[in-house]
Length: 527
Image (cartoon, rainbow, N blue to C red; front, side):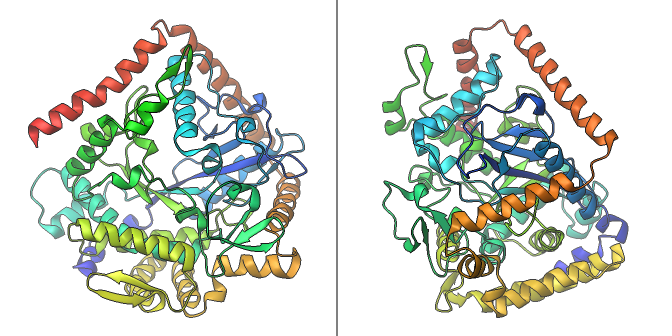
């Protein structure tokens, strides 16, 4: 069936894969300490700017490309956004590693500010909630998210091959969730190949229980780690481990999230909603909003102003998927290379085209164990991963996936008149045969050979190099003027939103949260 589905995708369809990138980076001072300054005004409003916003912290930029049907065009826009940022942050650097720089005490890590409108205040209060629930340090971890979709023309062709009854959007939802289930089964391979966080600054684990080993003064690591960011030390939560999210259908996914959005959680109830006039979180449920749920991949749909993501999905279906498990590549000025993008395209098509049985509770547990195993021990030759009743080595299972990807890479090469997709797959195969070719191993080697085994020294040197490189790279007057207009327009738009607000914030918050309560009741009645 995978080959049959692939044959339904014409060269024109394969040339029209759509992708976009969302890249997080910490702003740091010239000495490598986290910047405690506000979001630079010349970059516009982080509430309304379409390309430059912030994530958890005022110092954590999020750079967002448009969608592109060309790998080179996507990377070119990401590069331009970096150039614009560097021209507007004075002498600061963009930290090129996923694990953070030197961090101050928690109270000095600035939380993102989005103005006085209700939606702006809600974004800040949500981040206050994250700080209370998980601590600010964990929120300073940065990643690069990859958004992927097939062109509209591909879906009728695939639906016909599958002889799927129902309307086209139902089929698209069905197919994207099949992709997601296969992705969850195989995402460990991306951690092995593209994990680039085998070490951390000592400040990140200060006061925490951990089993990392000291490498040099100021650096901790695990010798076979690939992505500590995606392991138990990174984006993890004991509370969220109780959320049993099913990816068997859009309905089961939405229902799982709605339960978590409305289920009271006593430790969060103890935090409280507010302390006097100061809000501490949006709600006391297991999740404040959908985006709080950590995951390696998400089904997504562009949302309307004020609309909740889960409602957009339920009403209009899945539009694209967002891959969230890729670390920043510290060997790239913009955090990702064309080789990685092309492998992701092949890998995601493989997940879509391959038969995808429903998930189960046992498999969900096994997937999580595989993820954590590869995150902490991915290059350990003794590591065995769980697949059903079998235990397989990373190389054995990984090469099975690679062989299944080769036909897809060949089809993409043929459609695009290139050999780049096959080269990306061959590079992945080489890294499976020799762990020294993985990003994590290369990073530890460079740290050892040139930076005294210092994570900070390695990332700082590369960040300084990329700052100079991006500032020296020409930026056209036309592009600079376009981004200047974007910044000005975003500030005007924020002020218009603030001027139009008449509802008290507490009423806004309650109505915002009550949408979930209503949906959860309906879901229980229908289920």
